Amino acid sequence: MRVTITTLALATILFACKKENLTTQSVDALSATNAVSSFQPTVAVLNNQLNYPWEILWGPDNYIWFTEREGHVNRMNPATGEVTPVATIADVATTTNYNGLMGMVLHPQFETNPYVYVVYNYLAPSDTMFEKVVRFMYDGKTLVSPTILVDSIIGKKNGNYIHNGARLVISPDMKLFISTADANHRYLLPQNRNSLNGKILRVNLDGSIPADNPFGNAVWATGMRNPQGLVYASNGKMYSSMHGQTTDDEIDIIERKGNYGWPYIEGYINQDSIREVRFANNYKTIEPIYAWTPTIAPSGMDYYDKDSIAEWKNSLLVAVLKDEKLLQLKLNASGTAVESETAFLQHQYGRLRDVAIAPNGDVYVCTDNGNNADMIIRISK
Ligand SMILES: [Ca+2]
Ligand SMILES: [Ca+2]
Ligand SMILES: [Ca+2]
Image (cartoon, rainbow, N blue to C red):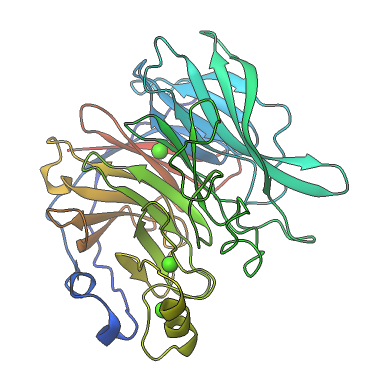
């Protein structure tokens, strides 16, 4: 395996962010500024021969565990960049740049409960595509004993394979959260409480429905378009990043029974939008804590609470696809608003897909460019 290590100091880039209809936004959202950081991170490319990694996370074995969209689960030695394959999941279907094997999370007590949870698309009869959440057991070498926890999430509309989510998170009270997208059925599914699409789902770690879920099924929150980022932060809040359509990518704080508005509300509730105001008057909805217009395509993210990069403490770190950068969103003390955003790595490594944080505070990001040339990159002080 060819491993290249490069170290370069990076200039941070001022990022101009246009916001719509400022008069209708919350004071907290208005106060965010585009910051220029004096922090010049050290960057090392650990591996540049991956193909569409989607989830990267720090494992209890001190390896980076990651998925690749075509169906591979791997472990990477963060010191050398060497990759050890764990498994290839046979029924993963990837038909476009938008689906396949996506989110993954490990059981929080992995030593005694070596469970690996993944979410992926698969093909079904009659030319349909679905998405399911599957729990595997890691036997020390590969993944065995698949158990389907959630199934029949719609993955396709007519010939159209877009908007498939999907991230996994396990909360401190041992619930599995799943972000799902609308599969382009915008008017049918996100506001339908009986549909698993366009939602944040919540199940027990064995796939059963918790008794305190709001609607008696796996649905925890509604009205999402394509949430590709989900993190349960150590401040006790769960944040999601979501792709908007032509406007309004969002950062949302996910709450039980929360309705995030899609497809009737995009971003903030703008007072000059009859559609948005009417919907908000009829249904209790939650506005994002932050939104981007023009859109940038935010994907995986993590919450930074380490001391080693002091500038990033209490920030969301968001991998951005279309605008090709890592965004630091500095939060206020209560975690309820974004105070500033700062761009790193912009246009240096192409599209960025996901983030992982090591216990020592180093940050890892992966690219989304394909051609067996995708990278996992380490960022340190
Ligand atoms: Ca991650
Ligand atoms: Ca929304
Ligand atoms: Ca709006």
